[in-house]
Length: 217
Ligand SMILES: NC(=O)c1ccc[n+]([C@@H]2O[C@H](COP(=O)([O-])OP(=O)(O)OC[C@H]3O[C@@H](n4cnc5c(N)ncnc54)[C@H](OP(=O)(O)O)[C@@H]3O)[C@@H](O)[C@H]2O)c1
Image 1 (tube, rainbow, N blue to C red):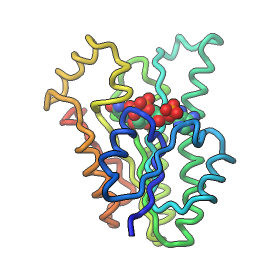
Image 2 (cartoon, rainbow, N blue to C red; image 1 turned 180 degrees about the vertical axis):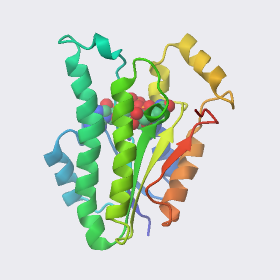
Image 3 (cartoon, rainbow, N blue to C red; image 1 turned 30 degrees about the vertical axis):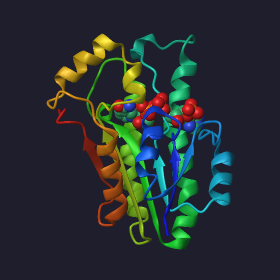
């Protein structure tokens, strides 16, 4: 029987392509903010009570760029939105998904982080900090559930072909691609293979997997 995947961010640039890639092997439930607002713990809780989910992929997320000294009353709401969706949203998903997974003694939680969690790039501080939270949380969740058949890993994405990458102005984006040793963006097919591996191999848990075309630091 196919396993059920809750794909948060399934309406986004990466998530919608990924849903198609994984569709033949899994029952995918793609979720956007109108289906389940991850900021709303009650909504996330209800979703997991009403659905039997084996695997969680969290591709929800938002970005906003600002130097730290340029945060003021004019844009504090953007900072708070990043924290609410990227940090609290991830915590809501993880906490609520674990309840049935621990009872069933099976689960896979795959969270999406970013190369920016470790690579300092000006104006990305809040986003980078949110992704750092995800990488740390991953490790604790892994050890808390290591004897329960549940694994938790994060994927530290470099620059992929879709979604937020295309929010970067074209000229700057082309400049970034030149700095990637492979001189290209990541492909969704490559991401799908990593996810399948993380689902298949129980012994991988608590890792932050770097998938970035050699763009290291
Ligand atoms: N693209 C890249 O190369 C790249 C690189 C590094 C990391 N990432 C990470 O990969 C993930 C996917 O990015 P993307 O490029 O696909 O971004 P995207 O196209 O902007 O998609 C974002 C997704 O998040 C969902 N979302 C936003 N706010 C939400 C909320 N309050 N509740 C539930 N869902 C919400 C959106 O749903 P709606 O459609 O309903 O708004 C959408 O499905 C993000 O975590 C991002 O940080 C991407």
